[in-house]
Length: 186
Image (cartoon, rainbow, N blue to C red):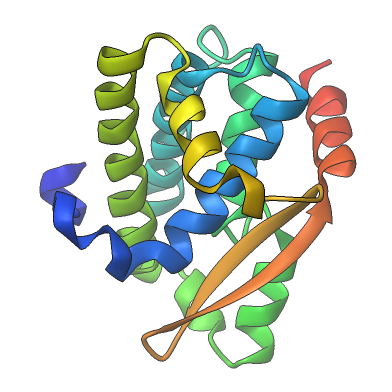
């Protein structure tokens, strides 16, 4: 998907921080509550999210049932809550209230998902690096050390681009997100 959507260079992360922050903080909150949702499950969750996005952009459906489990599904939902209007109804409502419902059209979806996909690919590269340098949970150990003290509460954060600026807000509480996943998994 890197060829289709682009790539964030290693030195350019700050430019995308308003979306990287809610993605990574949502994932860290899940990992804290459910340690089995570790770095390896995070890479699986990113793959699931990329399949979700591809499905939304093309209208195709993919059978990910054998790959999905509750540990990677929690992280998948946490990542999607950061930017996806079909997972997070608050984002959809915000887009509609700002007159941006046209971005929800199938023809516009690829443009809407461009930056989230770039961020997901950058997070995956970071996971690969930190797993290689610090083991199976290297990524979450790094995130916890880097910004863990500033990540509090159990709200899922999200970010929406508004005229080249990101609008950052808080969404549903972690418990509600996790209970929805458990109901969905059954």
